[in-house]
Length: 374
Image (cartoon, rainbow, N blue to C red; front, top):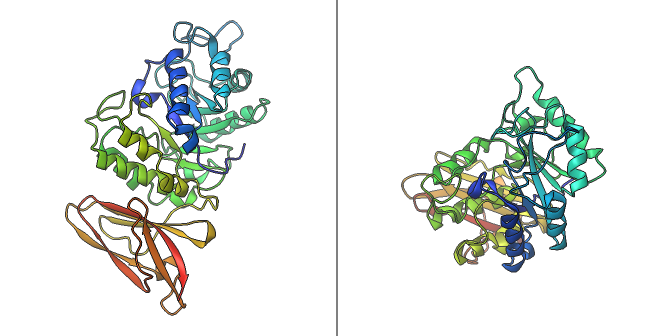
């Protein structure tokens, strides 16, 4: 299926790892509706690794762990669908998953048919234990074809960690999203490292196939499966704003049942989500004012607007240059630019030529820019 916008949802891995079960998934689906996440746009409930038995059945089919999921996956899918949500699952293109459960290598069409019969809407497809003699591109193409011929529309979320530069070929091989980095950790250095690693590749992400920068860690505060010290709220705010601006899938990794109100409101921020889900669906690009440890990026938005982001990773304040010429608005064009701070709502006067943006150390700002005739 073709994704018109980046998906939004929740995944088990960051917080729970292998400690998953039917009750957890159902409770989370309930809370996604009750706490406003569904209304904000989050619709996929995704089970990651460790959901199956260690062996396939006599027909070579994957089998849900009967202790963790006593009613089976079809029952769980039906429960989630009745909530108006979508159901996501996990497999691997290798012979084992990363946690050494059965992978789909050689069983792609059987597994795709099984997922379709269960009512799966999204498949995260990992890269653990992939044979060195096998072809990576063909492995993702094979599962894409299997899903496309399964009788059900199922999102293929490829996760090969950036091996063989997937931003160059995943779209052509049938993926709807592709993981381009190793796993995120719950610390500031991790999401900044991911951002840096993909800064040259954002422009390859667009409607139908999105660069997936991995799940969000917002609100975890050092607890859970990928905990490595945690972040401050200000760090989480930068993390979410960055992911939203870049148009990557927004997949919550924290425990939705227990996130504090501040983080819940951040994850449901209408202005940031509107940029992520913008109907024009253009990828971000670097402006010429990118320099040193201060990154300036832009995105074309619907109705002729733009989104502008400045991220200062210096350990000191800077005045970051913003040239409107780099945004396609020349000084003698007869047009100026009005900047609205997405988080504060503060509006600038109509500016011409450019601006200097004052940022403290490790600070960021995101603007919605409106082009105004003078």
